[in-house]
Length: 164
Image (cartoon, rainbow, N blue to C red; front, side, top):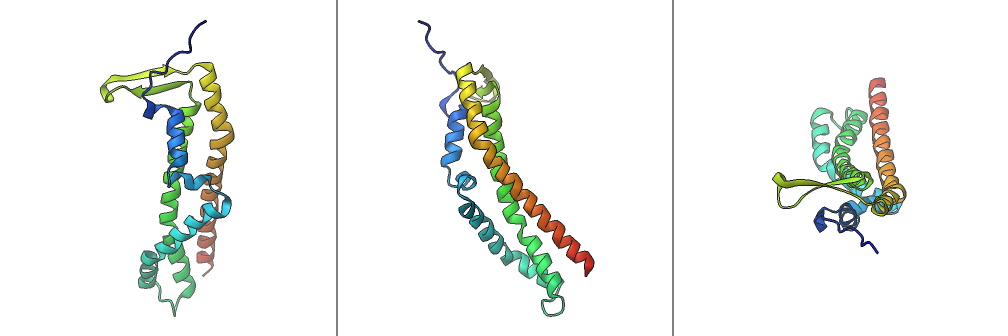
């Protein structure tokens, strides 16, 4: 009876373990929460960002003379921090998605100078691709929809700005 091949990839570099770490991380877990728990930090970051964007907008447009421009500029500026946080989430999940989906796993045994590549056995590859299909793609889709909503808000704000 042949034995299963031993995975030479160090534990912390195995895609399944990278996925588990990401899923359990306080920051990256944010993308896996239900819709309202996911949106709450976006709104919190947006609100906190007004601490910087509000005074910048007020320096450019007086709230009493140009309230619409003040609100549009402040809101657009405040969207920068949530967008950066969401971008970090997206890049982390895409990285793990790619590592899980690929049939090979590049890894380093002790440093950058001794890189190796391990070809996943079929059962490992199928398991990893199922995780991508049924877990990670929905997370990436949610993040992409959030980026689309942010882009739509910027476009809407730009359109209103042009009408002023």
